[in-house]
Length: 147
Image (cartoon, rainbow, N blue to C red; front, side, top):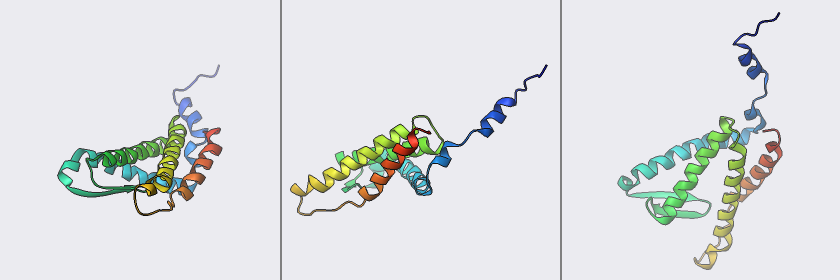
């Protein structure tokens, strides 16, 4: 009679494929960049009062005050990106779902900054983030089934 070892579970886990291997190199690079952005976002929320003037910019939105409506929104986006990075890098079940939500939010904010804000400001900007967000969302769609 074969006796089961308590270490058999570890052998089974080592034979499984890592979800992280499903991610292409460019997403892994951005994952590490947004780990840092998420950490910095938390620091901005915690110590923004002491920082005075701080330049925050993402997806065409820009502010110089950490504690303003746009400042809170941008800081929240940075923290969301940090959470997405955690979910993808540490292979969480919810990682792909929240990454897709993040990509859609990014596309919406870029769309607003490109097509709505020019009516209220005097310049039009073509956001290059869209050129990364669309392939990112497509790649997430492709690997979601295997995740």
